[in-house]
Length: 97
Image (tube, rainbow, N blue to C red; front, side, top):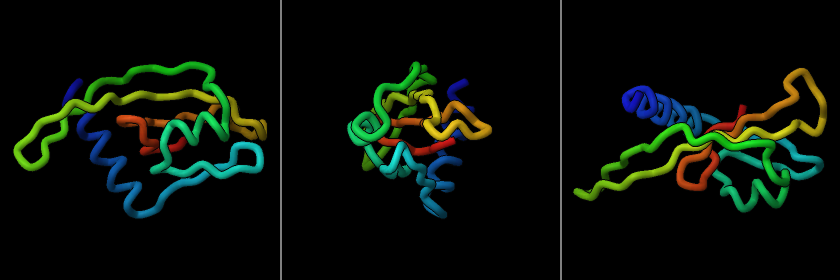
């Protein structure tokens, strides 16, 4: 389980480096790299949240744990995908689906 979370995290980092995905909430834009405060301000409260796991980051000899969550929100445009999924690591959106 821990290994799959790390692989998912690495994939999300590489995907966000190549192109940051953005979507509209009403007439306001939310992008990968934005914080949850901006997400809540622009899109409102999520339908529900799910804690996926904990990512362990090692930098410069220090080790820190980062919470990985998925937030599920209703798509205001009612397109094919009525639910949007935001993957959040330590309060930062790393993936929008």
